Image (cartoon, rainbow, N blue to C red):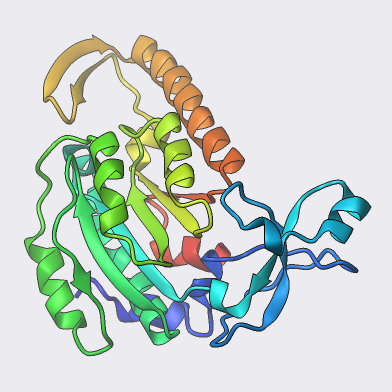
Length: 281
């Protein structure tokens, strides 16, 4: 099964839901809290978003700190998560283990932990479209395992189209976890994701193969563009230098966009066990 006992044992006592954090600041301290409530009690303050209601702005705190903060109530803290899983062709990369296979193990333990921690978890896949959803419960993980085993990569990435359809898949107050290599998702599309859901918790799990991170040695190498299957034979040293420069520049833009959009991005390498990375988050 993709839900491995070694991962369950390794993450025993670890609260995976901590990846979905609301960062708050009180009037007296700079502390962070992560609270789920069932009523409409006042909890703390968080940084103001443009879509927040002005009636909830704390103007005294603004006068003290020079920055807008809005009041947060227990009903604002959601325990719903949509996991959006990349099945585009670029996820087929990887020599020892495909990014797709690695991600299947990753999503299994994350979904399992979230469900056992009291979250409602919904799973969908995407490439140029968004596909059917799977609603988790503690009793249907064998059915989910079968779904993962039958899952194959197919189309090319069109995240702009995914963004257009995503609101209809999100619950009224859902958090969002996207698992992808993000190699065909632009920094601008990350910014749009935040604009679509300004008050939701969004987390990005980036899965890269060990080869994509370290590249290779040798005289010549055949490069394959995974989504169009275009092949090109180039000198390895020249390609390595250009590849590292291009990948570094691209990832830097992605990281800057996610940081400025207040969207955490965690990178997983397929040569490091997924549960080890999760425990360090």
